[in-house]
Amino acid sequence: MVSIGVFGAGTWGMALARMLCNCGHDVLVWSALHSEVEEYSTTRRHPNLPGMVIPDELKFTEDIQEVCKDKDILLFVIPSVFVRSVAEQARPFIPDGQIIVEAAKGIEKETFMTMSEVIKDELIKDGKHDHIKMVAVSGPTHAEEVALDLPTTIVSACDDHDTAKYIQDIFMNTCMRVYTNVDSHGIELCGALKNVIALACGIASGIGLGDNAKAALITRGMAEMTRLGMKIGCMEQTFYGLAGMGDLIVTATSVHSRNNRCGNLIGQGYTVEDAVKEVGQVVEGLNALPAAMAMAEYYDVEMPITFALDRIVNEHADPKKTVSELMNRDKKLEVSQEAVDKYMKIKTD
Image (cartoon, rainbow, N blue to C red; front, side, top):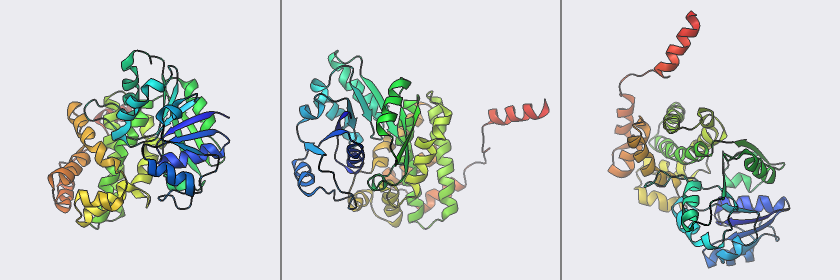
């Protein structure tokens, strides 16, 4: 048994906390909201996970010092926009050498930092946290299914492979299969960018496009994600794995996907603000879009779907006209010229 402190009582945080608790670990969940702590402690239910029962052994706190005290693992599962501020609050209570698992999905626009990088950047400001061990976990993992013990796969990523394997051992059980990876930056980039593409897929459904269009958006969206990842030094295979293609497929197609649903409402004519209100939860694709745009421009990476989505979301472009513009772009090779040249050389040798 290990002792785990969980930051965040949203659907993903609670699904993971319940799973880890049921595996026999000592789990304490922190929320900044008194109403959440009181409700979940009393009802043992989560309003957005109606089929899930919260184990009696799972405890809650509003005290950020308490959730950090004497924990083998600290698990961050909070909306990306709050990660830095919560890490700043927790800094005085987190010991150096602490293993921190980051499960939120986002990129900070101003710095291009992933969420694990944001946490570490905030912790080292006092000069007393130089040996923090950061692990990113990501994959096709809708909380609604994890909360019901449906089979799920995920990736534990850390440049220290032994630490990634340690988290693999903690998280793996009969319902959760965990793989490891050393490309934590690529894993987290996938987790943020797939939400952007899922928004675009939702819009396509909302304006009445079919499965062909959605398949094209998923495939070409993955090409955009991979191009950006390769430009900044990530492993190409990461993008074709669970945290890349796997998570993109489920987020772009599932009825559980907030990003897909929000995009669908925008396609139907809702304003972005009204669509978010209708979804009723954080839509991380909207939070990641500004960073995706800024990174594409900074690294000079072609990302036409991402740019088209930005025009719809931030410039109020007509979705149907935007689709037409995408369809009428200049003709392209599907693969890179480098790949073509390499293939032809092999054939002729």
